[in-house]
Image 1 (cartoon, rainbow, N blue to C red):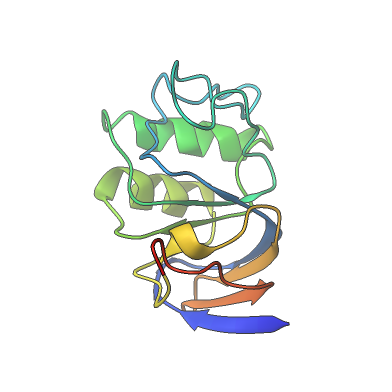
Image 2 (tube, rainbow, N blue to C red):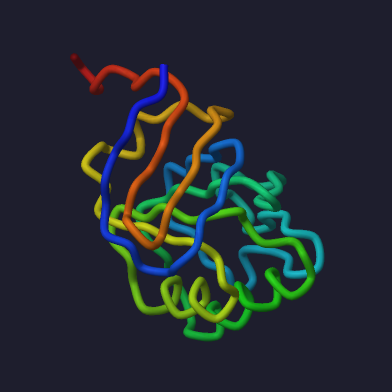
Length: 142
């Protein structure tokens, strides 16, 4: 079943890929290898996962403003996510997505932690629409 969610468009374009939800913020500077697209931050819940070609959903970024340039480098090397969904965009992630031409949406009208990894998702940064081809997980404790 395809569900349509809406958020705020941050970086223009459309991107489709399998969803990868991070339960923790992501630091692109020293947290993601710009040559491989692999999350390398020690102890991160997604350590060892590739973000390349996936729709990456996480609450917000963390770390240095140089992270914007790491996102841009990922895009130039073909290792970037297909799109980004944030609960709340911060300047580091937004600037990197814009520079790298990675579609990005924030403030979706569904809790990203209720979305299932591996589900096909299309993000439209122009309209803020998120097409989600799957079920929404129940609220924790619900």
